[in-house]
Image 1 (cartoon, helix red, strand yellow):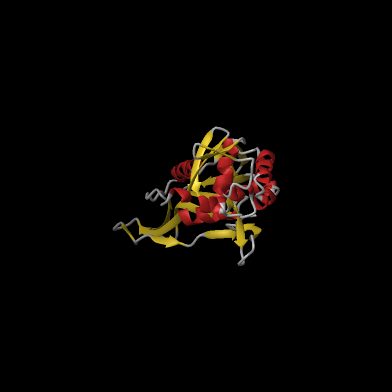
Image 2 (image 1 turned 90 degrees about the horizontal axis):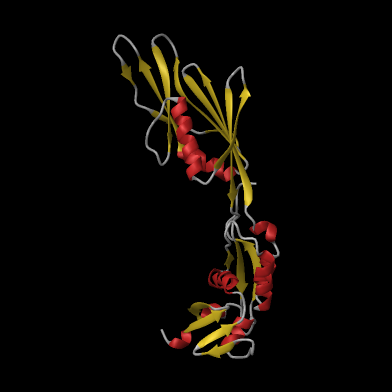
Length: 272
């Protein structure tokens, strides 16, 4: 790779190295004109372009040029400053995307787990504000059913996985434990939650594994309460900040043109 294909920049004292083609993604931008030395704002010093702007924010500018997507940390808040930087570099497609601040900010996701013990059985109901999270949990949680006979010769049929019970896109119900069917025959339901391979029949153990799974997935437990004291229905409320789907820019170019840009979702979210 020749030295002309690699460009070094010092932006606010922070050094960046990238391809010239990256800086030319938008030919009418000031960064593209910089390479032709058509913009006096950028000085070439010891083989590096010196730019007297914010170096931290420039890292997001450069990431956008490399990926044509806006990807910001969950705690990012300097939207207006970053937009001003985009306008300074005359990267107007990026400035337009940053104007859609409500699409870029993380949103609060709420998940509720209801747990009910009845003799030898435990019942669970999961409700989530984001249907994609509930769908993912439905893929992780599997209920296995087996039939057993307690006498005179104890035996058990092989465990069979059951289909998920989804009353709606936003909730999931399942149960575990044992119940008698007829005579000395009883039905046992076991629960497995990926990536854990255990098949658990005790409701309290399943609840503990479910809570641990949610905590590892970025949720935090915000409250516990008893919904029904008579039936002893316990409710566990979780929440987390969910990063939105990225926004991307599609660049359409024709020979002799500088290109046009259109914003679109890079990944469509199923959850509303």
